[in-house]
Image (cartoon, helix red, strand yellow):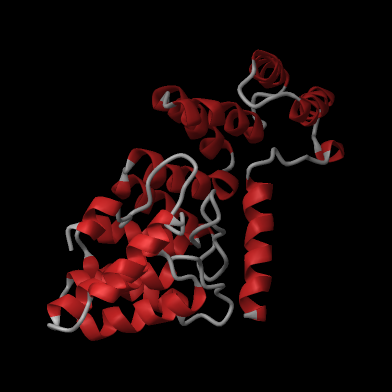
Length: 267
């Protein structure tokens, strides 16, 4: 429990931080114009994201320092959240072009989360792996998944279930991997889809010990039903958890392998 609480705190910090524009040390900029652009960038943190003052400020900074990748990235975010994916892509592509190591992971995750562009997400994450072949890739923007796990989910969505399982298992086996809120659940669902119910249940049970939400209990009840065992208590528990709000949540989109109340009711 203590280990989980520490993990939860670190993850909460990560999620909060990921939603804030990060300050930059402007003294490292190579020219006076870029230093001024950097100062504008830092100053714009006081404005609401996507506001007129904020977006116009980024435009002014870009004129001063067109090679400062953070300007394009931060300017792109409001378009993404508002569903203007064309404008977002133009800006984030420029940010990635200027600094792929910094922005590939973010673009890849957003392709997965918002666009369901699984092939595009895989391409970005694998390009990032070439930059950091043995290292840490970072987490999804919402803090839910380490990017190796996110890549596995993309392969699962593309129908490559065995590859997805291999990727998740390999990541979970790493000593420095912090198990995410949904890692074992996603692995369990993938095993379930292949009819490997022992492995599926093993992972659902591991998930229960860490973070037992409605979707996970629902799949445990599905395994029980398939095996002609009593599943109604689990079904009832899944409905209770759902009504309590203990479900997979995301502020902007729906989770991969999310389950809805009607599905639980129909079991």
